[in-house]
Image (cartoon, rainbow, N blue to C red; front, top):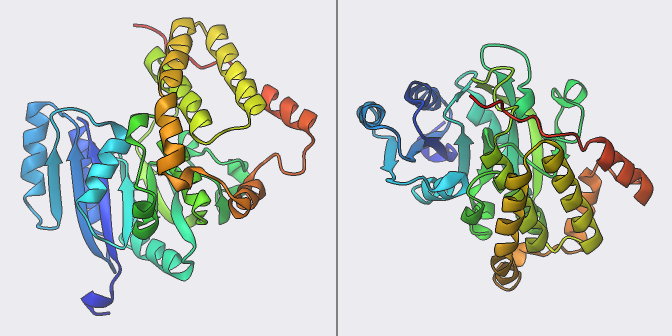
Length: 331
């Protein structure tokens, strides 16, 4: 195949310390065959010694571009900055503690995306690094992981650790919402993609290994919980969630936070989320993709685990899953 016939892919990697893992992620991206690739690494404020190593490593191949920020722009802001440096048909996000399992993964992803032009985001299968076990911390789908991880399915979300976006779709909705900073940026982007009549597909054919321990990222700190409450509150307003539904889900958040001893973090998150309401209202007028039409609602309903349930059945399901937050011990 001639170079001009190869799909063009921008592989974006955000770096913030963990330099050894970041270098491995870059090397894994460089192995990908059957595509014309560019790797954009955005460093979000790594320590000087590590940053020096990263700079040196990025000089070894002209396909690598390094952008160094003095301050952390957050996950969505960093991904937007990385994506802006490229022009590829497809944008891939790879966590800096993840690697492709072999050199053919992105060629497979491109083949799927080219075969289905209405896919806006393709979610990869994510295994625990060096094993055949699914990374449960990266499984946020409605389906049971043991039953669905080896099957393709359409969904209403994707996981940030490893995925591919169609650039036309991504640029068409102005990328990520940088105001989120941390947590739920994929939820926001997914909703706006679906509102723009794109589908999201999970595939087990494209696989990455994620260097995460069984215990890693299960426990929550107060700061993380604050972002969770803040961003969920903001997104309820941004996407005009039916008021009783928004109140119900916010009540569950408050109950979970208070029961877990995260009282201050919970109400801090609520205050910050409500303070973002003017931004949410502004989006109603400036971003058509926050509005759902009949086609978008039908697709979202087809992906919902509550499809066909009565109101009481939905309430019972939500309450049964509302468990206390697994808080990280101090010290």
